[in-house]
Amino acid sequence: MNTLMETLELNPNNLNSSFQTEKWCGHEFLYKFHNFWFTQTYLNTTQIVLQNFKPLPTDIILASFPKTGTTWLKALLHSIIHRSPKAENPLIYNHPQELIPSLETNLYLQERISKIPELLSAKSPRILGTHIPYQIIGDVLSSSECKIVYVTRNPKDTLISLWHFVQKSKDVEEDPWELEVAVDQFCKGIVPFGPYYDHALAYREESIKSPQKVLFVTYEELKENPNNHVKRLAEFLGCPFEDDEEVEEVVKSCSFEILSNQEVNKSKELPNGFPLPYSSFFRKGEVGDNVNYLEERMIERIDDVTREKFHDIGFVYGI
Ligand code: PAP
Image (cartoon, rainbow, N blue to C red; front, side):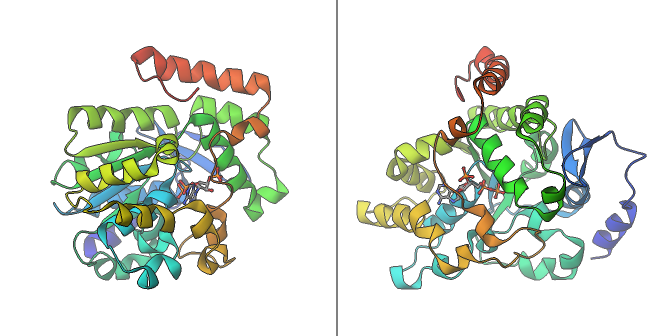
């Protein structure tokens, strides 16, 4: 516990002098740390995670760039690991973000520090989320036999989902994040935990190098064939399903239609340590919604970056 307190003292709130900064939206600034961009809060908590989090060999880490399917995967992983009879499914009464906390956004927060040992004492295997890029948290994650599931989503839908999410913040109501600006910042990588492309590529590379340790899955393939990918996830995690009905039940109970209609997920209450309500994690849950918002020239600009960053190195995805 002392170590945590000491770390906090080493991270004073005034970071402006030591990090490259960019204005983001509302009153938020982003800070550049190891070539990725962080809000002030997450820069602090990320450093605390790096210095204090020790993964157990049995841990399952769900890694993702924001808005790429984190909530869905949290629900799926929880259901795959803790198979429970339909009526007792904890997803009926608990938001997926509460069932599976994220290291830097829900756990290693100043106000939760005293509760960390208790919060991390969950029954094995623990499932924990993170948006921290592999370039930054890779050494920590490779220090144990823990498994990593990484989910990604096509860049245009990711951006549109993020743009909607950010509009819900009070701060941004007064100083809107114009779509034009959002496209520009996304393409330059200046969004929380960005650049999106570098984030996805490093986890993808690890999944190719160490397929037993890292499983890489896309939002779109999950949408297209959820049953197959849920089976694949369960096999990767060492707990394969015995019958297809069980798979069907997991897929159904975690579907957007079911989850977004649970009272807990419609709630306007704020999750622990988070400035936006539980309901903000559920919007449309569709593939291709970006075409309803992005102008042709915006699409072309993002596609150009996608070609350069992904396609040119053989990852044909995202257009
Ligand atoms: P986070 O990284 O901040 O936790 P994350 O859950 O990755 O957010 O992203 C939210 C997106 O996932 C929303 O997408 P949209 O804005 O395009 O609609 C949300 O609707 C979608 N989502 C949440 N739950 C599900 C689900 N069960 N199935 C499919 N999509 C989902």
